[in-house]
Structure formats: structure tokens, C-alpha cells
Image (cartoon, rainbow, N blue to C red; front, side, top):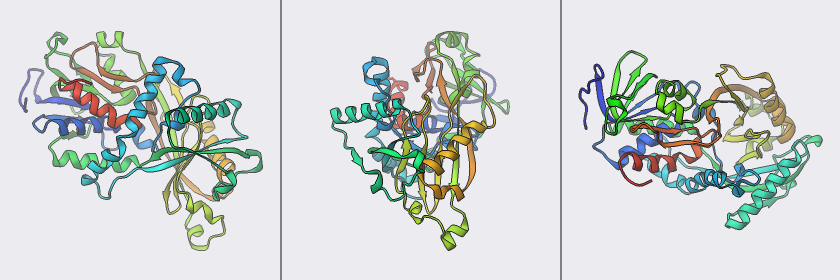
Amino acid sequence: MGMGMFGFGSGKTYDVVVVGNGALGCSLAYALRLRDSSLSIAIVGPSDRTGGATVTAGAMINVWAEIAKGQFDNPAMSDRAELGIRAFGLWDGWCEALSEFSVQPLSVRWGTYVINNAMGSPHEVDTVDYQLDVMRQRGVPHELCSPNGIPWLKPDPHAQISRVVRVPDGRIDPRQLLQACERFFAARKVTSFNTTVTRVEAGAGGKAGGAKSVLLADGSKLSAKHVVLANGSFAQALVDQLPDVKRATPRLVWGAGSGLDISLPPWVHKYGGLDRSIFDIDQVIRTVDRGGACGVHLVPYGDGEYYLGASSGVWMEPESKPRVHAIHVLLRAIAEEINGAFFFATFSMRGPGFRPTTIDGFPLLGESVLPGIWFANGTKRDGFTISPLVARELASAILGGTA
């Protein structure tokens, strides 16, 4: 299509405008460019990504530790799990390709310890039993570990660990992946707009092939054949402007979550005085989901730096600050359920970020009832994990292929 003028006021015209620059938006723009070097593509989102789920996350590539008890007994829930399972095998290749545009090579560090302990509920025990059954049936490598065989896992007596299962889930810092995408965009002529979208217009009566336009916060407009709403829960304000889409689409609400960046203070590095084994944490340690949330998880970054997550709540309106009870649970968990040496660590807040959560709990993926308006959204806490798969399939669909 190329750039030009398109009748919705002054502005530039693109084949695809992606609204949102988190994991799903960036991955989609990346996949579109790989498929067609001639496409004109714009991606819109603030550079600080305030409120974004991706930059608030640890982030973990969670599949097997996220399986819910009975998940494969329900066809829709089974399909949802299969998104993660299918995406799982794409990650190594995804990182290898993006490493060309990264300051340091991107790679997933595989391996996650899932624990049952005395602080959990009987439901958590049943959930791990179910996860083990699923992994056995599917031939997924996993390992039952002795709690005493993991030297840095030293909980308080009242949080005694009954079982540790090593599953093949992994981790990668999402900020590095987003930075690589940004460098790719600069090198491959994907236009980035450091702002937000305040309005979307269907144009041409919403007919297939008709131009769509988005209004940016600075008052300028972009026109496109395809507009993709990949800006998480913030997309609901745009959906509300499109009556047909609003009526046909489950509402997005605000899946609020905050994490903590944990650091061992300089005096520990210099003089010691604490259990040094915590420097050796090499894999994610986590509980299973608790109360519909994502459980407690500690993600090691190396050299005494960690991510601790994550609080979870679902609000009808966004809250700009985390709640005391949510952070209390995290702080108590790291010192009591993982290792008492963390009692002396320092922390800073990360978030809140808003996981895009639909009223029915299922993702919004694909074209809406209005031709040319697409969703890469509603993935709650699965968006980062499934982003390579969603990007590949959605790019194919947008360009007229099968998905």
C-alpha cells in the first residue's frame, strides 16, 4: 500500500497499524515484517510502557506449571492450554532470530521448580498431582526432587516443603526481548510512535477493505487497512467507540499485578554474613496458582538480583498503586517459604501492570465482527508465553493466509 493520504484527515497511511507495544504487539509487528518486507507497518505505544503487563512480569515461559486441575476435561480450557503448549517449542528459534538485534544473545533458561508446602492448600496438592499425570501422559520430561537436595531452598519450619517437581518451563527477561524488537523495527523500517491511541474510527461503513484510522494523543491520525488492538486492557476504551465490536466482544477488565525487584545489599556482597547459597539460585522457584492468581514465584537474574511476583487482582477500573495485602503476601513468602536470608534483602516495586483479562477468561485473538479490526488481546498472564505462536498465526491471517 505504501504511505500516503487516505481521507480521514491528514496523516500517514499504513497497511497495518498495531496498537500496543508489549509482547504481543511487538511480536506481531516483527512477524508481519518477516512475512512481507514491502508492508508498511506502524506500531503505537508509549516507550515507558506504564501499566503494561510485559514489563511488569518476571518473565516466565509458563506452560506445565500453569496447568489447572481438570483443565483438559473441558474442551475450551483444553484449547487454551494448547496455545501455550504449541508456543513452547517456538521459543528457542524465536530468541535465536531476534538475537541479531540484541545487545547480548537472547536465550531461554529452561527449568522451574514447583513446590507444594505447608502454606498451600489441598487444592495445590491436587493440582500438582494433575500436572504430573498430564506430563506423564504426554511424555514431558520432569523430575521429582528431594527438598533437601536443593541447597538454597530453606523455608521456615511452618512452611515445610512436601514436594518439589522440576518442570521444563523457562524464563527470559522480557525487557531484553522488547529492546531487540525495537532495534529490529529501526533496522527494518517498522515505524514506531511513542504515544497512545485515543480513538479508532472504522470508516467506509465498516466494510471489508475499507480504511480504518486511529487518532493519536497528539491529535495526528494514522490510516490503515488493518488495525490490531494489542494494547491490553487499555483497548476497552477503543472498543467502546465501535458499537458493533462492543456488543459482540467480551469486555476487558484490569488484571492488576505487581512484582518486586529483589537485591542483596552491598554489604552482603562484600562481607557475607548470610546464607551464601541464595547466590546460587539458578532456576525459577514457584508455588502453583493460588486463589486464581499466579502463585508466588522467584526468578533469578544472577549476582544477587531477583524478581519476586506476583500479586493478582481483577478490577473494573485500574488502580495506580498496589494493595498492601498483595505485597505483604509476597514479602512474607520469600522469607518464609524460600529462604530466610531474604529477610535482609532490599526491594523496589515493579508495576502495577495490567494483565488484559476478559469477563469470560478466554483470550481475544483474531478479527472482530468489524472487518479490519483485529485483536491480539485478553491473554491474562499467558500473553508473553504464547506471543511467538499468536504473532505467527495472526500475521498469516491478516495477510490473507490460513491460521
